[in-house]
Length: 223
Image 1 (spheres, rainbow, N blue to C red):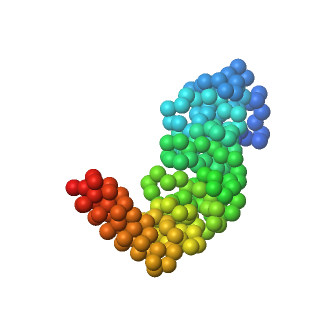
Image 2: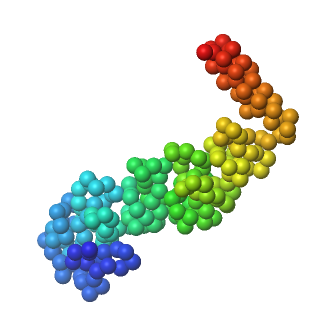
Image 3: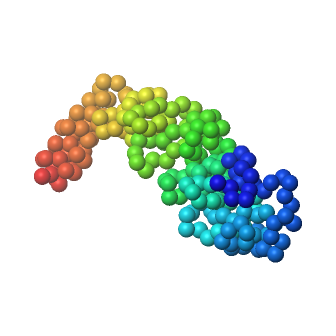
């Protein structure tokens, strides 16, 4: 796995008994392109400097780590493109999608990007709201809840995509349109924005109601 290097803490590193003189003293130095370890000066590792499979190999500054049969430079600095925590000096690789993950500083504060609980100061990481493109963040509420195959932050603000009342902040519930909305009592529930007589309700005069002005059956843009 580690070519001519020892494996320590999931990282390929030069042996403690090796010195630069033990390796190729006529090889290229740190940051220069290489094909394999033998091209590099001393006991430097040859690997990819960022978490991209098509990136060229260079002589690394601090050993290498293996990910999916490819070698990557270890201890990548903040903002480096990454694919796994082991690539980063901070041990935190996260992003808004699998395509834009980067090494982040550690630890992450509430509301900042994360992928695992241990990325966060408060130890709680979850999706900010329900949705395929919703980012995972360190939950401001300090709590999370499971639904389906996902983990979501509680305390979602009004308007957030939800599926359970417990996902929403105090005083809010998850409406029939799957949005966190103010509960506001029975009257508000009937006459409110999502209520039966509300703007978007079944008989509402708003956008989508049967009598609505937008796409309602009797509305200006109705069918």
